[in-house]
Length: 160
Image (tube, rainbow, N blue to C red):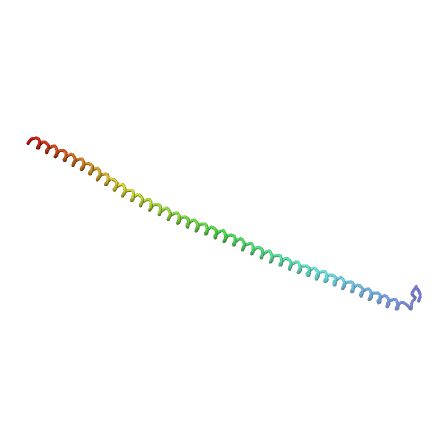
């Protein structure tokens, strides 16, 4: 084979060019297929990564929702505890007020009883004083009458 093709080699050259063109087309087709395959691989990888990110985001969202729900439960628990402690404080205060009321009422009743007792004692003392005064006056009057009677009888005895 020579470097310069001759006339007989024109058909061979055409065949070679066809063969080269076919090879070039095959190489181009393979390159295009490889590009398409790479694109599909890139798209598939991107979709896979997006799925992973979406799953992570959903997981984070679910965790955040659970944390929010737990925080709400804790807040409600705290609010319930505060309400309960307020109710206990109110009930304790009411119980203390009832105890204080009963103590004041019993003190008031003892005071009234003491007032009545003192009034009765005062009445008894006045009665005794009045009686004693009446008795003293009666004794004095009796002595005075006796003295008078004695004077009258002495006068009678003396006048006889």
